[in-house]
Image (cartoon, rainbow, N blue to C red; front, side, top):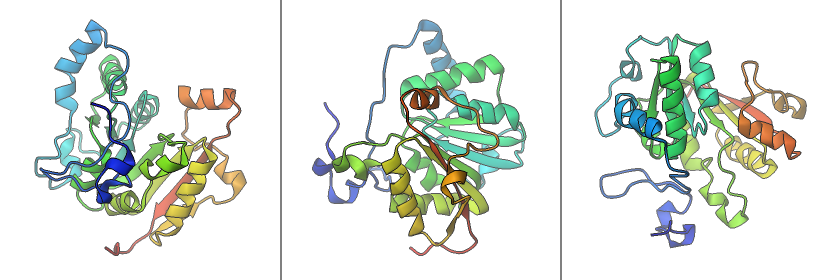
Length: 252
């Protein structure tokens, strides 16, 4: 069965969002699987992945309890793709706990491969819609959140499927600690403008480094991914945005 188009979805789901419940899961747009996994990859998926997976149907009181090493901070990456950035951050910052969300099976497999090869114990994964995790995590539990090169949904009629929406920014604000950072990077100009316009409607976000020159500078701890290298080869210039979560309550 093919994925429903946005116009075929119930009205409350047409921006790509609906709060998950037992009877009404949140909408997800996009592929879940690419090329078949090798026997070794499948073995790791069967044996290691269950130990790393988060279960948002279970009660949670504090996010630090998801990890065994008492993390000093917790970071969350939504749509980690090939997992290069997530794994790099975990390796460079062993004191933090990293949560990675990626519904694409081959992306999850790449993460599991790297976690096993480097014996990383500070990453937890979720292989469905990241909205489930944002709704599940305790309020003010995340210190840094990454949304890097998300699917831009190029066609204008599909822009409502973009992860950046009023609903999802509210979710992000809820889980970010005051002083926490939301990092967004994209090589698609229309998505950068879209994000700036949506964030501007959220008074509890303040952009850091808001000039064109500063937005063009990679993050200090950035390591180029394969996707970004492709963007440069094809003549696209990425922008790196950082928003600080200010103190204050979200207006529902």
